[in-house]
Image 1 (cartoon, rainbow, N blue to C red):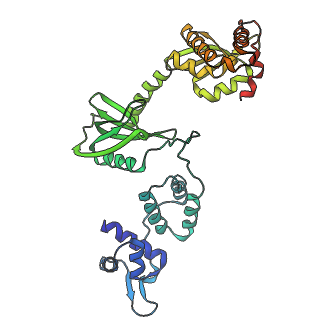
Image 2: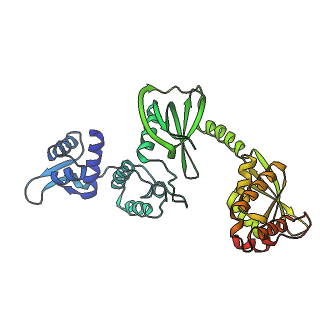
Length: 350
């Protein structure tokens, strides 16, 4: 810790030119006695630091001497500060950046400070849910990975109560704004979403690292298996032109667009983890999408449709009878038959 403090004191001297013991103590949050010892230690180690007594005195670097502690180019400095905006910086990172700014020549310091203001990261999604882990948990896991220490992890899996398990933290991965821990468990390598971490306790035991472990390779294998599970079912469907854009925005790369059909609709293939889940994603698009196969997805859509009619038919003008008529008419898409009544207005969904 003292070595870090001595570097910070030197950088403070470089920034201010002349400082008092009181100013150093306030800046580094130490006692004046400690600040004086650090200044004297710098002078004793050969740094050209001297003190001047009396009014207007203080500690200075001889001849305004400077020490280049970075060795970074202007482009490297800009890149570094652009990726460490104020909303992403932890307290430790902000302290590090402050030290680094002081080590920069004046001509580069202004650019670095401007770069930190050039962008921000919003850590919530559009549902106002946090997509990053608690900073304390992330910091603790980063330390455990670097130091190679096994941890007891408090973790709440999706739809499960929080439990505790002992894991070997091997690395952290950020994917699309979401952080994951890759760890060894008694069942092999597993991933843990950091936003579901409830507690981190260091055990003091060393991590058991698999022979030849490489984080990038392990992540590709783990994420590949997960991706296969997400695309376990593929449905062929026809989509109304006014609904195609919305379908692509909702499901992204899980939609593969084919060619146009004679009736002006578009043939697509949509991937999902299971027939029920895929039907749930498509049901909200109403008659703007008709699944052609497999029959399991069509059956789940029919079941969901029946449940919705049973629940909401009374709210349809004309009552349940009119809802049944609407359902029958919109169902007659016919694969070449007439266009569903609701499809003409489906563009408004966008």
